Length: 285
Image (cartoon, rainbow, N blue to C red; front, side, top):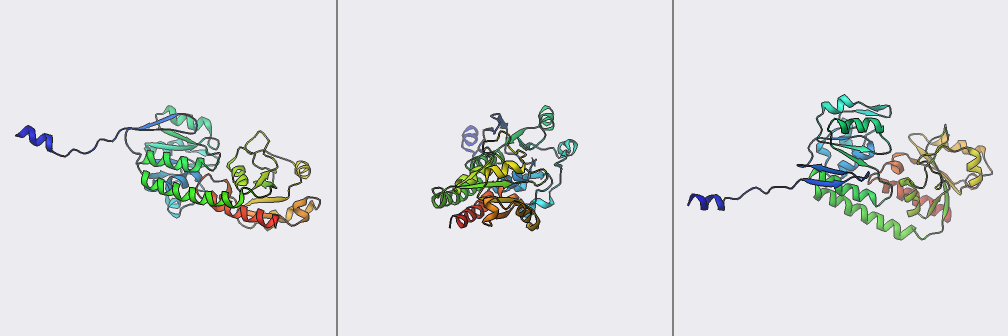
């Protein structure tokens, strides 16, 4: 009878270890869902919150300002580098790094110290929902992650149906003024531009964020200049009036879009896409 009772007693389901492949092609293995996660970039912070893992995030880098809850999370570094001691003190069971944005030597140092790493590098819009699903698996928040994916895919489909077949518009995207810098065809921005029916005039350059000179911009003669802005965009936009021979200047097609809306690899990139698509359609009209 005792044996029968033991056999009939309900057992808690045993969850298998979690295995996903990151954007560097490395397998990431966790015995259980991550409960202490460190994010090494603002876009990763947004991805984690969107995937339902916000409550597990214990450390973020500077400029992790979205959503509002991210502002109160301890900072563990930024553009000048990562504070490895601060990261280790948080005892993370998962660190999510930005493959092309974080110092490679510091990231590898974390790996050598036994920290479980997930390297993130979305290059296309379809990579954003794929990343959300994997982060949801690692955090055990698959339901929330799937809801975010469905919402993203619905918005993406609508934009593609509305704009992808429109006449191409040549665009120069300025991410920095001194030195003058842009993004190439491998960056997520260029995929956003293709979604809107635009073409990056510097898509063929080899570097992800290349430096260009004004002569190259004049030779490319973009129809539209989009400037990544933070606060007041008027001085940055007005600076282009020194080059009236540019088509974009001659026709008044110089626009500012908040930097984080187009360069952060997160669901909010579709907010920037909607703004950019509307701009290009005004140019066509």
